[in-house]
Length: 119
Image: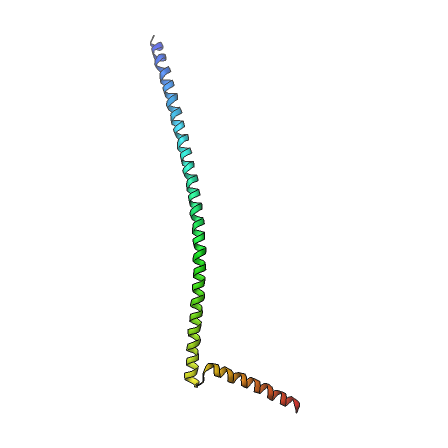
């Protein structure tokens, strides 16, 4: 008789245990599914943000290149002005005038060479 009572108690416990195991298994699947959804959402969000960063970087690059060109032009003009000033102070001749003299000397040298060839 004792076995009959034990068997009567084991059957409901087995059904209860199977239900509990099934619920734990289903909860695990639910956690997996939720994690997968969140992972996909995060990937989409990151892809969108990355695309936005690339677009912003393209804009910043264009602005930066323009600033570099402007700065380069200003610096070159200032350097040229300072070089002209140094030449003017040391030689007393303006650089543009010095370039004109150089061109005249070159033309004169060419003319002398032609005259020398005629002799």
